[in-house]
Length: 482
Image (cartoon, rainbow, N blue to C red):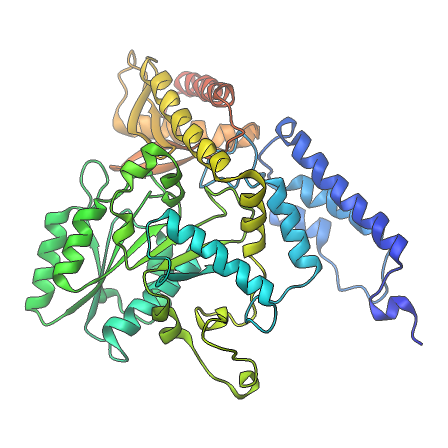
């Protein structure tokens, strides 16, 4: 018999000790992460000097390797779960889901087809039904699939829309979205083979919502020219501002025009759990397809995105293939093979973490957390408005707020205001005390905060704003580049 190590096996006692060390490290991270700096910096040269080597022919001590990884990888990565991580869309996560992911990976569950794991497929059906109900989609007829994230969910939705609306011929097909739509939609459109001239980017109004009049004009113009309007993408919580497009009005346009209505709610969809969010998301139930990202505001660890559709057959009719090697495991029609509902054949067991965390905490806890995030952003807006140093550019919407340093007693030109806010963001990042970056709104450089971490407190935000003010004052003293 070959040696145990040659079989990639370890003794039980060895595995337990090693596993305890890993769990202990994760728990220590969760307990003490607020005490750590949220941001890390390193150049490619620094990383190469630390990690770059040829694959070793002979192995090393497992604990030595673990120590190296904990020190140089886990503790030297930007922490998007940190209470002072405000940039992009933070990843707050939760410990139950972390352990669920460990289970799914440890047991190496294949979640592609029913025969691979009936329990995994069933839990995906169950959790999908939870989400269908939450968003007002028909549970009996509706369906969906967990994906790696919103990018893959949007790609899957547009592929289904093209198949059902255009068939195999889509040379004249036209797709519409606003200038605030997420870049993943543009990427999906390019991957699916659409030409640039088949995409209509509709301007937004002063509230960053899609202009309905300009949308209607674009559709009418395309029809006159012989084009085929087939898909409209709405944003339910844009990344830049948290803005929700006028979903009900857009749904009506799609119904009248025979256009597929896709809503990208990757960021803001989960806000439906709160009373304020539900009002803002009115009309989300009228979508043909909807993207939501549980690894954002449903507090799940990466990766878990989700696509919901009003009719599960739309996905099956788009993606089903019947290779010979799967002919014996198709099962009956109620035994769903999720590889028939999307692009991936091999799929990890993503549903488990969502299932276990909701079962453990209950939806009420999730509702309270989302409501808290929205209220926190609104409180931050109040604090900024009573300051003589800050200007609100986009008010708190679905826990996103955009503002800029523009002291009322300083006569600053637009370019100088941009310089000072870029300087603030750069200095905050260099300090590593918070993760805060800029975006562009109305051709202005602004600071953007996304406050979806339920462990972020008002003091965390105020401390960061005070830090920003100190850098703003510093920049005023240094002067500006002409």
